[in-house]
Length: 464
Ligand SMILES: Cc1cc2nc3c(=O)[nH]c(=O)nc-3n(C[C@H](O)[C@H](O)[C@H](O)COP(=O)(O)OP(=O)(O)OC[C@H]3O[C@@H](n4cnc5c(N)ncnc54)[C@H](O)[C@@H]3O)c2cc1C
Image (cartoon, rainbow, N blue to C red; front, side, top):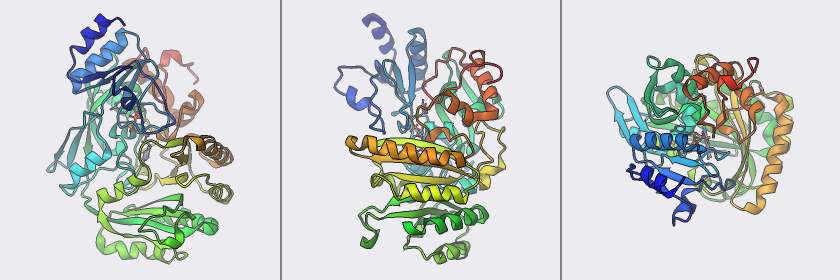
């Protein structure tokens, strides 16, 4: 790339180009996980779809490695790359709610906090995750698991259409009616197929919810996990509850007696009729009883943002994950052992239910192939101090290695780091070949490869 070529490209843009040497280069290349330290050649902070088209064409023509950044939360740092061009969508965050049709159109760089803020004003919500700073782009394209999954399905089950820029620079719409093969693939297939410049979702009448955490002492792990696995599967879909091992933060509203204690927790969200809530929560209140029963009514965006202060950007994160069908007693024994060894206060293990409404969709109906699993589990070693990097990595790996034999095989793509092709294929299993065929059609040269990469069919042996 000579200066004239760069100049010719940048002069066509409305957005900003940031290069090594620029004052904001170091802040612009930072992603959420501080373990990731990549140095792109050029960050194109796109202002609009025209900028995205120009940047895709430029990266392709100049044979540059291309990364696409939505919210920048990806554990493996797949929203950025070394020595290539980054399409940074972080200023494309426009949102338009249609309260009559109960839909929302969201630009590709918005966060879920942006969406919650906009939809809550109309008493509506879209199923997403559990932290408001996560990007709509990456979370949705991988599936989207969160507080509303059991009641309304994954984020992709509520996706109605997308606008996309493809590898050849074409702008297309994908929905059940238009480019249906592409629409199938992007619902779980990640950023493999192009840049999504806007998403349109179906909304649900959710304004205030009843939820929060219940905590039990770590010594009760065995009985709590056994109770939880049976309880949640039979609970009404309007009740969501994800299991976690946490270290209690030393701040209100947590009682001082629990500060910095390792505990088992379930974080609940009830989005059904208020009149039923007492009956729904009665067995939860009675079990144990919990060391903390933190359930109360709150606006849905408050629950979505409740964990944001505990996990600000800039910590070290090491991730490992698996889908889980059955939580056996043998697996529970592994959990109990490693929960007691959590190496830092923010390290954690979560199990997110993916049953209820998410089970109404078949394994092959979207690219997300593990509809028959009951949980997506994730182990993350987390700490602000780079000096703890080895400790959090070691604990996560040892925990995962002991637990993996009890899992369903593959993992949720959004909870994986850069773990190689075998892991990607294990995750898409029966859907991989169809994804590779769609990839061949829309991105035959694998321009979009900074992701959990699906290789174009011509690059994959027929039996893979
Ligand atoms: C603190 C934290 C909490 C989380 N909680 C949840 C949760 O509750 N539920 C859940 O399902 N996941 C959760 N995740 C995982 C999250 O879904 C992934 O990290 C996801 O990749 C983040 O998306 P992003 O847009 O922020 O990331 P980025 O790093 O910007 O991008 C991730 C990937 O998506 C692609 N991508 C992003 N936007 C676009 C776009 N518009 N068009 C094309 N490709 C795009 C990128 O190219 C990249 O490959 C969490 C992650 C973190 C760090």
